[in-house]
Length: 473
Image (tube, rainbow, N blue to C red):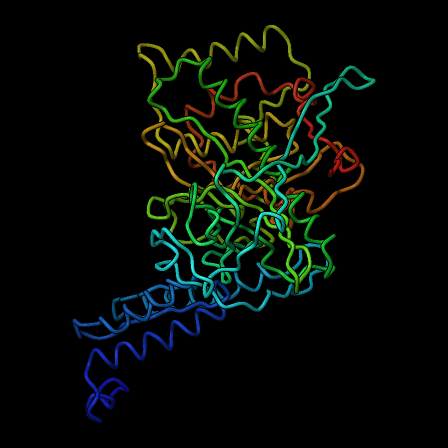
């Protein structure tokens, strides 16, 4: 059977010229739809050269599509599994775009994507073709400031505000914001972002990433953008605070210093005054090395090492909920009012882990999963930080995370608040999914780092500021 490539070659076009045309067509499609596009190339037969299919997959992947090359064996079960995975990918995309509260489909902003390969190139100067450029008098940079006050009930209350400050590099006179995003998450587009010297072309300082909402917001004005950036900053800062507590627990325990610590990127808000579009508020943080990027877990039960995210039926979700307490609290040992005897048992149990051993070393994978577990207990069983992705800085031996998700659920609350930490906050269901798959990875580090957190009252003070405490200057 003659394929389109064979026909094109017979018409006089060269093989690699045909390859390029087909690649560009696939790239144009992926450029438009990004992660909404599922591109599966299924190879069949004994033919050894599937180079064209692989190149098509690479072209789609370069623009952020869900792209995969499959070479199944010629059995009905293997073929059935491949076609089932296609249907699952499409269903996942539909679910991602469904509002958890209204159940309506959310609309993605219509933009063309920039290829990851282009965005990964190191540049010294920017061009007006690829970037919007703003002078410093069109830019306001704000940073998140947080402090602690004692409330009327003698509990700590976290307050915060957004403080105006200068651009990051002392020689910066302009900023450059890429016209097209190179990265795309469930909620955010990521654009290249730089500060520029007085010639408005030369890059000064670090490469950065600017993030804005991927979705068409409910309101078209700047108020909706400010709400988006405020929610992101509060989520990021709460995760940073929990990371500090986690690192303190690591240092207090008999854990080898070769075990990595955890951190979250700090972010700024840049308000760009565009003469045509008005004020654009974007989140800006340092750009991490995409070549070493890893995803340790997700907000849907996915854990590094899985081929795909698990699919939960209503029955499996009920089972996950039933198992959650047992897993989260180590065989159901939920302690509301602790006693000295219970604390001694806790210390004894941890001591058994160290018996006959020196300081223990744990992998980045162990640390990431334990931190998510820790965040749930350290926040008084109200929050769980997940979707841990980023890089392992081996020189500093620290996991640097970006874009965390926090699931919120207050078991003592009279009403169920939803999307407290943005649209990726899946509340109790998100927590149940995490612990359902975490059961297979909940090991010694989880037991060591989480001892002492069974007492709920001790953790009540970790609550962040309420919406009313937020002050934007």
